[in-house]
Image (cartoon, rainbow, N blue to C red):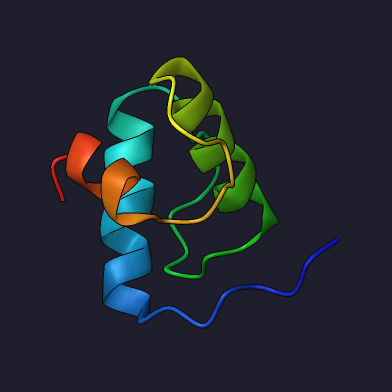
Length: 66
């Protein structure tokens, strides 16, 4: 398991909320870019046919509307 990414809590929360709205994230909104968030992002990236890194890349964030 990877270490949580050091992302600003407010930004991580925005990402989690956007993933949750689209049905990719089902956990508690924690504001921590943890393993559950990485996996949700990976699923989103796979569906969007962009590189599935699990990390909040510029491309992924743009697709999430962030």
